[in-house]
Amino acid sequence: MEGLPIYLQNYRCLLTVTIYDIAREAKVGIGTVSRVFNNHPNVKPKTREKILSVAKRLNYHPHAYAQGLARRRTNTIAAIIPFFTNYFFVEILQGIQDKITNLGYDLILYGINHPREIDEYLRKSDQRGRVDGILFFSSKLPESFVERSHVDSKPLILVDAFHERFDSLHVDNFKGAIAATNHLIQLGHTNIGMINANLNNTPARERKDGFADALKAGGIELRPQNIVETNVIKNDGYTREAGYSSMKQLLNLGTDRPTAVFIASDVQAIGALSALRQAGLRAPEDVAIVAYDDIELAAHFGLTTMRQPMYRMGELAVEKLFQRMENPAMPPSHVHFVPTLIVRGSCGMNKNYSLAEEFLQTSD
Image (cartoon, rainbow, N blue to C red; front, side):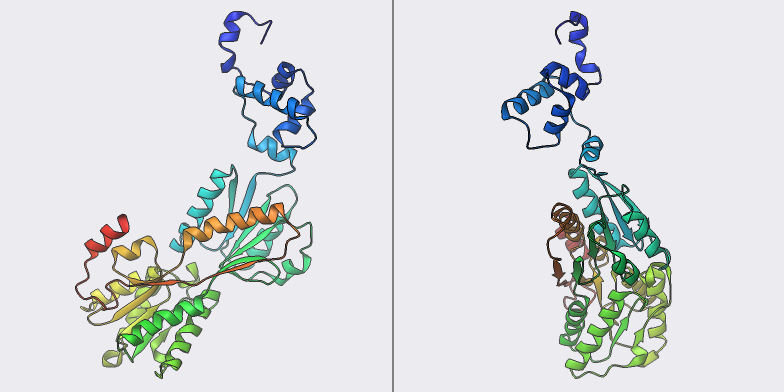
């Protein structure tokens, strides 16, 4: 900063520092400074050290977006996701957001209100200069996109979905449903029902298949009247209202109602508990319940449930996307999670179960 008046030197840190200032102070060209900040290998070590020293002295921090432009990146990723208000996706998004924030990236969310919007959002995200990669959630990947995808397409990670040509993270809903149903069988129940979501949803179909498989393997009759599915479009039926109305339908079976119910999500189970209370019944004394997801609210309601690693799925989705961005030619990889049974009070395994104790345990 030689040549500046002393009072300007003292306040130099308050001025906006640019790469032009760095180049002038280090007595090098602007291109050399740019190559240093973008980790280009063709810079002499002594020159690199000098430029970084000047940058540190002037308290200069390269702008993440400017660096992205130099690498022809936007420092932004897109997430195409069915339902923003679904607790399952909220917890996954939290893992994504925390991870990309640490990496200096931004997130664009596309919310799917109807399946016909999927291809449109994929086209938008795949356009050059919009985003660096795409996270695609819980929906069937359109074959039209698969057919037109090529080596120059944006990196794509499937979350809670699967296609052999793309990297994916998938929860084994079939095995999870088997484990949930087997738990009720082991508790001695033989009249077991299921409250499911809309069968247009892939996890809902997989959970129904697992439920039916477990009953068959256990030698227990599958009673069609004991399976309630919803045609609700909102959140594919993973809602409190759908759980409430579905439990009311099972209770209308009277004395032939199920003594235990596997419910496809915690949110639906919370609605089902409300229907039980309204009918003067309780879980597990009158109807044992095992749900699915283990969202934060599950512990407060004492739900026995199948835990999905939602936050970790979000983190890992970002990690896999960045691996794909750096190594576009590597073969696709597929990560399968098997959910874990979390036993609380709603199934009746521990009738002295304390919600307060559970809350304290989950708060540690």
